[in-house]
Length: 244
Ligand SMILES: [Fe+2]
Image (cartoon, rainbow, N blue to C red):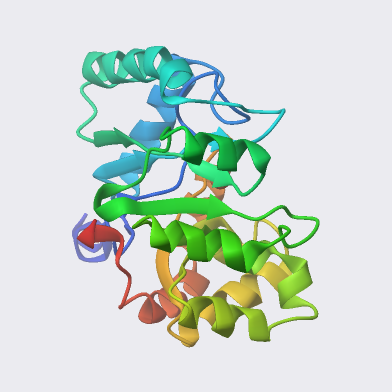
């Protein structure tokens, strides 16, 4: 049919091809439980336009005390699954470090796995700003790491009552990574509008997917097909995702 020809739409993809935040290493955190699920998630992520994945298992005191040693086996399984399915994605490992006591121990033991360029993905607790945050961040920079704060739009103690902290932290050299899932509405209106504000103000250096499971990919696929995304993507011009 001639109309089909004229109206056939190219699939909409993301305006970047590198994801620095997702939980696809099987069985090591609250993300993918097994290699088959991870393979499915990566295939769907490839459909979104993702070609390079820096996967970021949680490293959190008491709940997910992952180290390079505990992650090596599951990462190998994931590489095998990618090969078996012939998924054209390059996969690398780093981590999403909660700023807690376990993190300090791991840092002192020389056990951190940063992104290339010594960029280090860190997250705050959702309940409150970590004790001594400024000192911890300063200390990281002294050790030649550049911290990237994961999903700053999700910390309500900033967005609801201390918005000035965003500018302070960013000016002090902390980079920000907002979640694609925030823009897609996963956590609520406030998180979406805070993420947009960070994009508009130029403070959002990276967008990460933070995909843990199939429902997250589905939500992103729906978002990409929406008018909302067509508007939002105009703000996604200065991201550093693909420079890594
Ligand atoms: Fe995460």
